[in-house]
Image 1 (cartoon, helix red, strand yellow):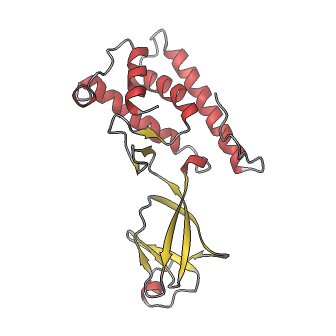
Image 2: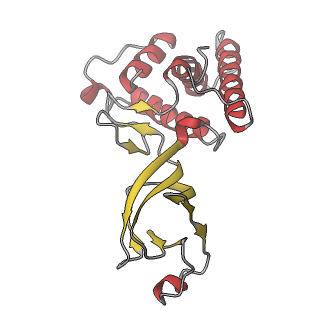
Length: 214
């Protein structure tokens, strides 16, 4: 379900007019506010757990023994770096890399640079992303902006999370006749999502099928 579909289903739920021309209609005050609500909601849900499998990403980097600074196209925090059978260890003192005295198979950071002790290898960088929206080309970004942008949250959770969550957050009126219905469905969906994350974090790992349909 993309951004336009999320917005239109929420607008229908709220008894508002659907978007027909995204580029024009998104500039209307109510639609802009709903977009802000959806962006905030997406972030609030995704940061609930680092154990969400959909936040776990991997990036390959070709290492060479004549450099130690790298700028991989990733955003988030690194959990492991592995090259072949070797796991790299974190080194907090970035100056060792610049003095060429960093321990072998170590990594660190300085500013926006990833520092890795010089070697010839192809390393896999495992990280937990902090970018929670995917565009039409598969690139990750921080916010919904285009009609065909999608959340990284599993598709089978999106509708119940976003339609209910966006509706009660948009209205912010506890006396609305559907407020409790929206809030209850949203809270239930969040509970099921985080419950699945705990299964992945423990010994009961589900490979086939991933997150169950709500």
